[in-house]
Length: 120
Image (cartoon, rainbow, N blue to C red; front, side, top):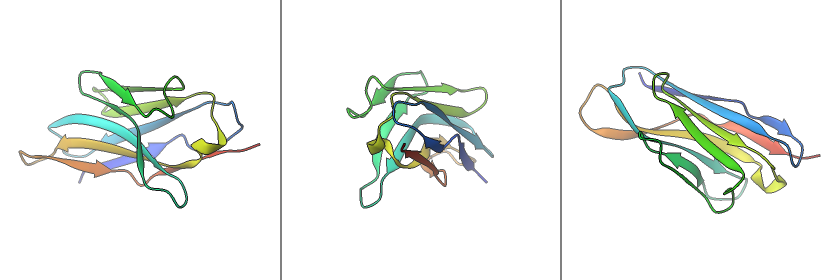
C-alpha cells in the first residue's frame, strides 16, 4: 500500500537548476530517514543526499555546495534542490524512505525513479 512517487525530473542545461519532489502515500505510522539516490548508465546506484526526521542532512561529496535536501513531515514529502548542474549529474534519481507502515518494523521503500538529463 505504501507508494513513493517522484516528480520534477527533465532536461536542463549545464549550470541550470531543478527541484525533485517525492511524495509518500499509504498507511504510514512513521518515516525515519528519507533520501535521494541516483544511477547513471553503467554505474552503481549511489547516495546523493539523505535527511533524518529531525532535519539533519548529509550529501555526497560530488554534490556538496550544489544541493539542498528538505522534507515536509506533514505532507510526507522530501525535496532535492539542485543547482549548478553538470553533465555528470545525468542519471535516474530514486527516492528512498525508511518507514514504519502497518507493522512495527522499519523497512526501505523506493520510488520508480525520475530521469535527470544535463545537456546543452
